[in-house]
Length: 620
Image 1 (spheres, rainbow, N blue to C red):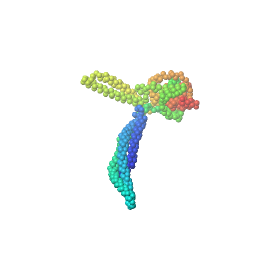
Image 2 (cartoon, rainbow, N blue to C red):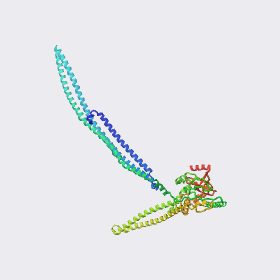
Image 3 (cartoon, one colour):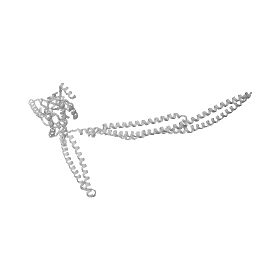
């Protein structure tokens, strides 16, 4: 089937004009579609990049580099950022190489179409003008023929009536008029024949030469337009296909990162991070209260211990941090104690210093003193920085800290040795070839490297000695654990005082202070207290806080650190300050002794009026 517009659509000029106009509109619409898609791709890339940046950690944390699930999430965020880059490149290709080219080509097609249809209109006007001229000569020939025929009829009628001389003269005149009309008709006939031949020639040229050429150009233009749309669609798909391999690799990396998550290794890592190395508490000894003599001895020992505790807690120190409670109470009740005592709750989160400052600025005078105490507890941690041997850390954490430090020192020593060897080789080269440099210029740097190397080796020996000490202590704890106790069951204690002495002879976990620091000896603790003693004088003369309720001790507690208060099981105390979420409650005994006790060791009975006061003070 022929597809030549010039021969098949010779009479569809108007329809071709409408069709080509609609094709150009479609081209403009497709260009707009590509632009909007490029904008969507760019917006999507920006949102993905913003999402990746939002959830990417602002600064690297040690925890996030330790666990496999954190590393997998970080890898996913990096691959999302790479996907955003690929989407930006796709948007750039769509906007620059496709949308802009289509816009430029649309203007060219509009101009070409306008020229083609102007030529078609001129050809149409020419054939119409020739047709009009033909019609005019035809009508003139028809009119002249009719007039000549009428004139001939009049002349013939006059010739039949030849009677008089006057009638003869009229017949001659009518014959002359008929002859003139006949000549005019003949001339009109010639003009009509000429116009007809000219029109036929123009019409043949129009429909067989001009129109096919013009319509063929329009058809070629339309095919180029369709081909350009095809190329644009193909280029768009090809641009996205180029992105797919990179996107596929990103997805593969995400899959590998997800498959690389190892729950067992992460849980083992938690043990490595938080293992303290302390031994669990041993069994609680039996306290015999049946003998009267033993009971009196127990009371006297209790009074001695109470007197000693009063002497230690005479000067209150309310600013000690209260983050970690003491070791949890025993699970099995002792004779004479509470049968079903609740276990101690887990420690609460530390109270931020910024929150304490905010409470300080917005509270009243009495509440402001409490905020100052809480703020001092936060500052005391800054003053009590750990020693160089990491003795403030639990045994297991101390060993890991020292091992990490030793590894870092070994790396620095290796770098210094490599630098020393390089300097020695450089000095040898300078000594063999003086023209290359002065060997004496290397000596200052070499001496500096040797001193640094000696300092690192001394530091390494010191840390190795500390590590050996920590390992020996861990081995001692392990041997005691295997032998069946931490010193609790091997020693006999007198009834009444055994519960207090157990807290002294228990595992090293009992030496954990309310601020969460672990001390191997009392010298570090005394140093810690001396640094913060300068703050105590400001609060020596303040008025005592009112009691807001009472409490009953569920377990015995021996307060060895300053700021804590010793108590025995079943003792009634006054509550001065309620637990603020850090696991410690401030209590008072006989208006003289005041200190902090673990909240999980007591049962609190708040007054109804005191509850309202506490709630109002919290709102303030």
